[in-house]
Image: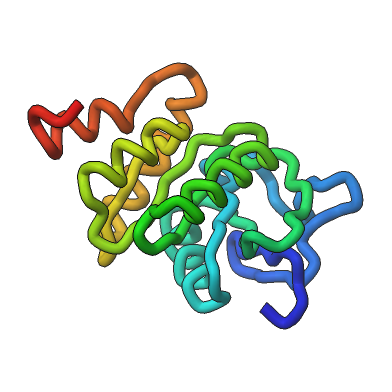
Length: 168
């Protein structure tokens, strides 16, 4: 990450210092994209690959690296968390990210998530959990419903029942 708190990839350019002092993103026209995704990943390569997926789907993105002190980002519409097992420390990190970024809808990527981990993630407000390796189109489809969660839909619970009948 070479010391950068955040980086932006949107459209055709990327910047090392994407944020203005007030936390808004430079050079992001919200009318020209589906929205602004905050990509939380532990390493730059993962964050950059997720940024490329966002670009493909018409989303602007800002990458952050938890648990470092996180920059204020205004105008974000969804959070993508690239995790491992969605264990206690990762769930705590997601809770902290949601508190920092105004309880944004969250799409979490996890290594072969179990039903109990998906349920635990749902309880802290994760909108959708996708297992890795994930299909790019599945992630892009998950982003739009994730935004709907902010309007009161519980899509994670619905998806859990669809993918794991009988799991409550």
